[in-house]
Structure formats: C-alpha cells, structure tokens
Length: 132
Image (cartoon, rainbow, N blue to C red; front, side, top):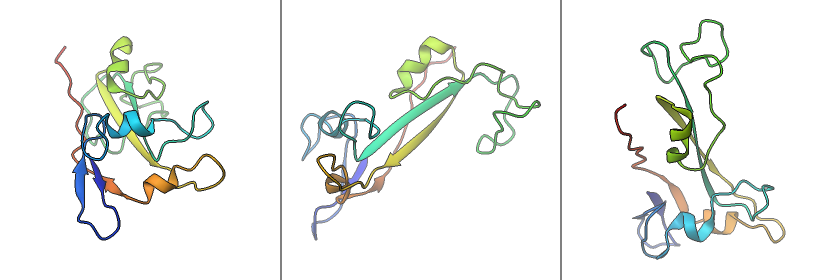
C-alpha cells in the first residue's frame, strides 16, 4: 500500500498493484514502475525484487553477504532485479529481497516528483509464495 496524502486531507492507504481511489487502474499501472532512463518516464515509486538460493538457514536474513566466499547464497544463483516477484519463479529462488526507490525528480518533462509529493511512504508490503 502507498500512504497517500493530498494537501491537508487525511492520509489514506491506496493499493500499489490493485484498483483504489484516486487510481482506479492501480498506482503502479497509472504511474509505471520505471527507473528514470530505462525507456519510459520515471515512476515516483519503483519496486524491485531479487532472488537467490540459500544453501543453509540464514542466521540473520537482514545481514547476508552475497559476495563473500562463506556466503550462504549459492554461487551464481543471485538473480537480476525484477519488477514483480513472480518473475523469480523462472530462477528457482528460495529467498527474496526487495528494494523500494522513491524518485523526487522534478525537472523537464520527466516529473515523478509531482506525484511523489503526495506519497508519505509505503506499508503492508507482502510477497506471497508457494512452498516447494
């Protein structure tokens, strides 16, 4: 959910991927999910996912080295960053991490900051996965 607030109006939660007011087609569909120079106008909120395969249980999932020789991430299993977690199915990942980028650019014709001015943050991020 995107935490949305226009002016002095109260904050409201709007769905990032599903329909909601003021984005009947969904926030992502309306505003895109593009980083600046990737061939489309930049989006105010960009979400990316990356997967990999672990070879052992993670002692601290928030502090995992992906480059060290003793990494619990199987060598060569780290995927490219993708736009939707379902894209990770093709790689056989059993772990996932995410990145949320807020683009406040307000220059020229590429102006995601105009929409981002009403975004207060995101909440309720969930990734649904099926057991292997």
